[in-house]
Length: 157
Image (spheres, one colour):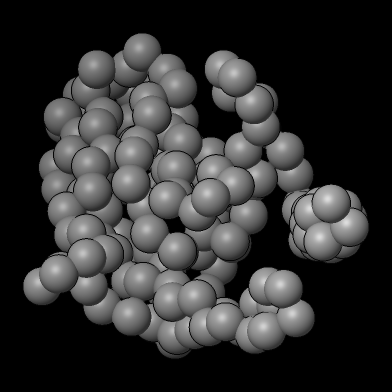
């Protein structure tokens, strides 16, 4: 029992210091952090980030770094823009970016972060007004992590 309480206290301390944001979902809370956009050699926090695309662009690939994106939820009903996961993080698809050391029960474990490719597919926007669509990228972490992003497609000129 003492060991369980210690683990729960450590987990609570870790969560209270490492969370940048909480996002509610049915039945719990996602931790909104640790999902990054890979831009060259730079990692950009993806939560609340907006990706801008041209009005005529149809397919745009993004590379992200996380502990493994497993699901994308569409938060808007815009049918003109979709976001899908092209590459996984297991088997032949796995590309490890780096390892994050975390302490569990007094021992340090190295948890891999993976590079994955996501694809934005958008119909050509013939309207003068830009259109937005929001998505939630969810990882396989035991405490579900996510990033809410907006895809903004420019209007026609």
